[in-house]
Length: 458
Image (cartoon, rainbow, N blue to C red; front, side):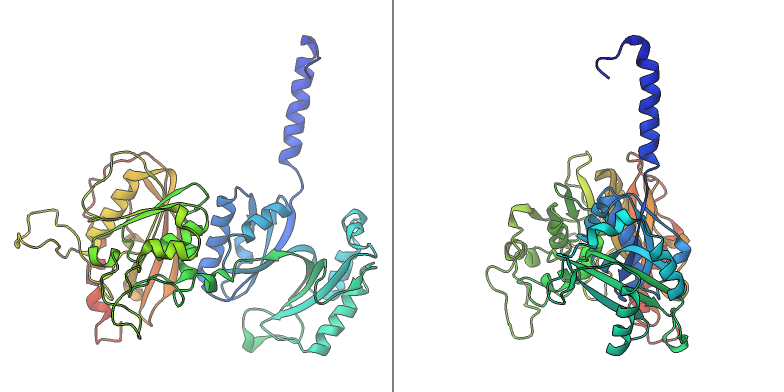
């Protein structure tokens, strides 16, 4: 290219454009996600957010996904993309490089026989070890049935290596799908999948960061797995600055720090931040002198990512007026286990009171205004919103002209109560919202009373 003459520039430009178009049309690889049957309403959104956080292009058919089924076929550009997603996902058991699938084993055999030799050759070496794993949903396969499947599928493949059940070089999966309802499972599977396992997801992180073994916890400490889900929804990446304006004991910030973000938070409860409140552990009367957020970070080897915790009122702006945070992750108080407290925006009747109660609608309005002002463009706000199921409508969701709704996933709490994990992304520069007091949001103000109501018909 450097040696070309000027008269050749046009042709070289055409070649460059052709090469670019070729790269754009490069072959996609098929993979099969195997999800855990837990927090089903969050699984797809976590996958999409993890792909965005790792800059991985993702394709899937929304009609192919069901909350009742653990399997989802997707397409990615490379195995490296699959590995990067798996290093973040806490709701995915594993991902399989999909070699073949069909509605029966005859179709599976036909699909396997059509595989190019170049794809099979690396796995037909005699010095490679492998093992097979057979699984079905929603059935369980007996040992004889698994052995039968192994022999059946192995007859389709030219493998020459040895079977090693302890430490194999490659693990291959045979997966059967009998539908979504275990009570109506047919005698034969609807779909059969075969492929090589890429890697496992991060299911172990729920145990590693469990609040049961955490040094500093409180009444409202966020479950570790849900905290990690929030961090994934927020696209938290190494080097980000993540903020929690209702930090409490900082469980959400621990999850953000796990993904490499620098974390900080605020809370109006000075005694809690300094570890001077009554212990929430059954066997302890009072807290230890080192029970604080920094001790939690130190426990997990994340202290170098801890910026600070500030005693501050979320309704009072103490920040320089510029975009500061890459993500804001928070679990605001609902008035159930912790009371809703904040500074009054107008003079309080009790001038000696440092805190005054205010409504949920005002709290969420303030949260969105704060996020729209201090998030960077493309930054995300992730927060929980409590709702009464039979009264909730999408129009009741808080909104802001600078923020776009990305995801809304439901976690059931009781028969008539749930909470929604709301994910919003800043798409436009901050515009002060003049319509903050929306009538639709007033329905959230009675949540506490309805939560404790004796009328179970709700």
